[in-house]
Image (cartoon, rainbow, N blue to C red; front, side):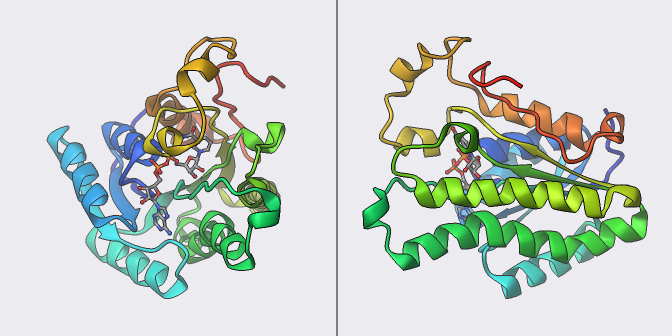
Length: 246
Ligand code: NAD
């Protein structure tokens, strides 16, 4: 399980799933760069990682802004070292009936959820290729399987991220860098609590009769980041309480 002080960038780690991933990878001895647009949330996650004996830096970054991504990567390298693990987790998930989605909102969702991971991967992949070892883990969504009411923009962005994961897995298969994805089902975070969904009622429709915990997603990410997962690329660990299988 040991990640031997490798540097992991976790985006959107100032809240919910990203925070749990940051804490879990730190427990597995990675050094964590927390990138989030929310400075307070990022600082709180860094505090939690350090309280648990880990190493973390908190950077305030808009993960859809190319210049900000470049600056954050440079600062991460200078303070922690080259990046070995990237978890593209930052995302927004508005609910908007399709005919009410204006073009700017569509672009914003695509920029944060899809173009951001594209820019981030390009920025840190050279570190991984130079080391001959790397892990890119993309947090997608079970909504790509199910569709999601009033989320035409969001599901499009996550479907694009799934496609990008598979394309890069193939292109870089022989490089030592793996690309995998974890699509959460319904996970108890501020994002889910803000959604127009009755989470408790919904939980009763799930085979496991419960909403997932951020730690459930973090455990799947920890496995994919580990040495044990070195022969796994282009794959999906669906973490959804048995809602979709196969
Ligand atoms: P959350 O809202 O609790 O956390 C998202 C974090 O991303 C926040 O800290 C936010 O500040 C950050 N963020 C948003 N825009 C950003 C930007 N431009 N730059 C940097 N940081 C930014 O949500 P969560 O539930 O923890 O979601 C994490 C990921 O999991 C998202 O990609 C989401 O789409 C995905 N997901 C969540 C669920 C669920 O049920 N919670 C289900 C499927 C997929």
